[in-house]
Amino acid sequence: GQNIDQPTEMTATEGAIVQINCTYQTSGFNGLFWYQQHAGEAPTFLSYNVLDGLEEKGRFSSFLSRSKGYSYLLLKELQMKDSASYLCAVRDYELTGGGNKLTFGTGTQLKVEL
Amino acid sequence: GAVVSQHPSRVICKSGTSVKIECRSLDFQATTMFWYRQFPKQSLMLMATSNEGSKATYEQGVEKDKFLINHASLTLSTLTVTSAHPEDSSFYICSAERRGSGSGYTFGSGTRLTVV
Image (cartoon, rainbow over all chains, first blue to last red; front, side, top):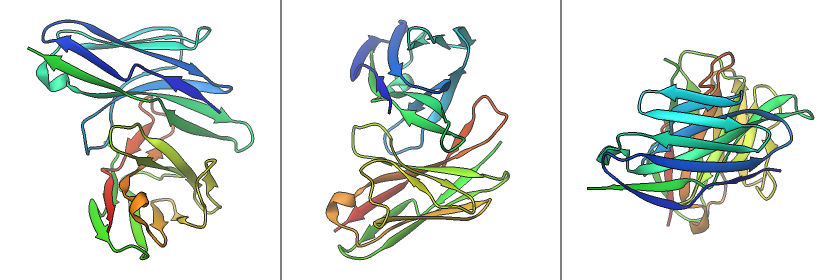
């Protein structure tokens, strides 16, 4: 099984920077994804890490440390439209089935205020 | 880009009836499809993994006789909620894995099921 933990809620100010943390425990780690989801909609892909380090993509960056089972998503220059749920998801390679499984964390509801 | 079409987007059914949800990969072959359920203000919970031409693998606690999954072709997977009850009301969403891509997964648009 997997334990993927994130803070439940965060609040930040427009224009600021926010960091959303994710910790995980897994046996066949094969990549970590961050998604954004607005209520009632499908998740939207933000970033992917499989090696340690920082991946930067515009206003969004994601960091991974495999030895620590830790990742964070960094959002810069926050905008009101960034208010959404942010989901950390871990891909596991399953030896028994020979395929990958994507499991989501608890999700972090981010509220951006003026 | 890769698209997964999910239908219906919303469905209301009477308690005791069955509902079928379809997911089609429109421009790629989806050998593996994942089915998730999401309750309000909660994250996506993996229900099962379906592989084309074989039986689905269900997560612990998910009743395979209640949530029937069929993945008969490389472009179509279906989830049937049998004998639906109000507690089955949820947001159901599928996802297909696209190999060789860093972004990896394409999601359907989701189905809001309400059982009355």
